[in-house]
Length: 290
Image (cartoon, rainbow, N blue to C red; front, top):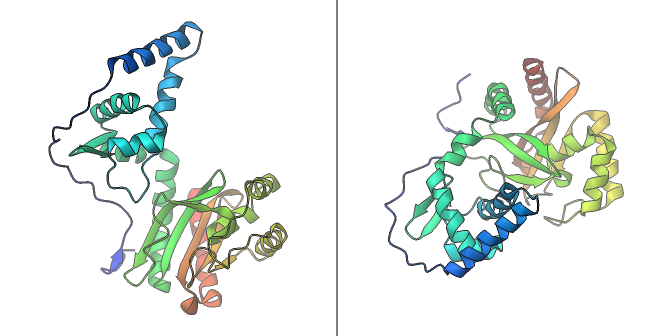
């Protein structure tokens, strides 16, 4: 079913940047030689030098948040915790590989990363399966629709569609939020092995709003109810004034693959009216993945 014209679909636009400007940087040869010698010594000792390189590249790429259009070399150094000479050298290599791009004297994440991300088979198959059902839910509810999977102790939003009056902040495609205080997270947590709940509690329950449940006992009681009823309702735990209704999604009726949710302003959330449509969509997704 085609979404209406006023629906904003998920996705991002990547534009080619301006030609790199000349930026001065005087790397100290001694620092680079010292790093090379260190890698050579690690290799001689039997360590895999690639692990060392990847260990330095990862914090550079992860220095970027979803709110960062570009970062200066100095900011990359500060956030990554690596030496300036190391960050500069690796950043130049990442630009060559297309994983970073130059924006004047700053750096931004490159288009190559987006291309690689689209090749992740599991996520691509899931998105293709859920999108028709999400669009149907949008037409029925006229509210924001999410599909999320979990990674470690977070939910990761695999897809999101919303009308113009919908929620366009807080959550974003590929964004993360805690399992314990999101509708999708609670739905997933309630149907996951008990060990995941233990890990969540051990990591600590931190309040995002004054309504966030941070009592382990209260959270456990919530999950018991969700497990019995098959549906989760989160109210203002992530953002004041908003609530989410979520259900788990099982491939073939047995394998938990994620959770589907409807998010709306608290005053407009019709949990009783939307529950049937949400459950029906989740069942449809599950059958398509069987």
